Length: 90
Length: 149
Image (cartoon, rainbow over the protein chains, first blue to last red):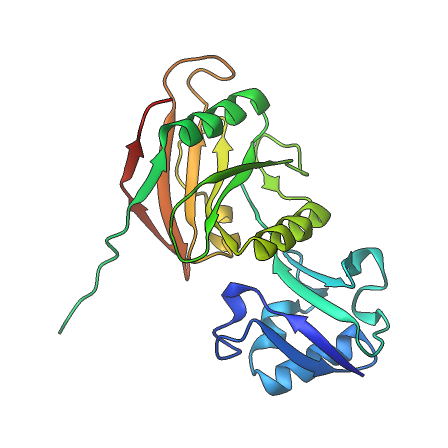
């Protein structure tokens, strides 16, 4: 499964400045692992010990994965994935 | 050894500054939040986009995740960026909290803080300050106001 992943500004230091990268995997977890292989450090920016970081949003075809199956969300060929840091604070 | 200092400034139109303050007052005592978008690479805030605080809290703000995606899609389509990301503090000073620093995800944005602690929803004195927040470091910058409301 090959998918396009849109990378936010703050993570483009890991992708050599690329805004859109390609990755593969049958689930979101596999896609994240593939991204981390291509862009070391990416995994730690997206995940912590409990899974997807609370203040990182990942969308599959414009749907927040928290409303899908989280990291177990199934990924199909040509799906589009968008990563956005939450805009939040105290 | 050569040292580099951040010598930034936020230049903002008076009507946009007034719109931010007005939004902060309207949402007091909850925190208000939003963006002033501008053309990519321009560093010029031009278009006010008030956002809903999904947390509806006096001590926290967060853009709704669906609104956030829609916002970034729209900015991308118009070749804009969030030049200013603002939120209000309603009981404390207009300075980034530890949470603000930990969660700041746009190193190229001007983070504007407004405090409504003095007069709440009413007209009167307010604090309006601008910062860069990158790699956990907060750097305050001067605010230059252009024009009149």
